[in-house]
Image (cartoon, rainbow over all chains, first blue to last red; front, top):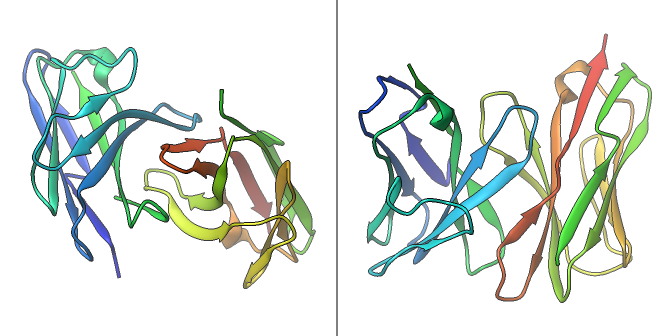
Length: 114
Length: 109
């Protein structure tokens, strides 16, 4: 069965609005979750590491104020794309790592900003 | 800087035509080399983890091998349902996963 649940799978929003994406670890408690962005025919680009109970760690070039990450519990992390623009349209994927070994991925969220 | 590359970028095979995908890595202190399958519009699906040179793992028509510098994903007698993008990733102690760009495999009936 699925280890990671990501919701929604698809979302269309208007420019200027905010969109929240949820990532749930179903099998185990996760102190760390990862958020990736994937462009068409490209590999996964790590955006940030979500840490339960503390601030997320963002990769270089990723705007903290645009991509808000909240990891309020050991099983839930959320990514909020604020003031969305068409260039934010992409495929966003979350990941959970068990004891820093295997990485399990959510089914991804296709965001389209119109 | 840790880096993972994959070749070829895309591969088209006839059903039953065996081949191999390559993953080359320069990851200091490699803890594990991972293979994933990704279907369009879906998240990556875990296939294998290899931990040391010489290790091999098999699953149905797939076999993954690892050397000190690269990993191969061998596909034996592929079927159309094996069509997908195959990603490899290196993981070192205390570091995040570093993904390769992937190989897009198309298996024609």
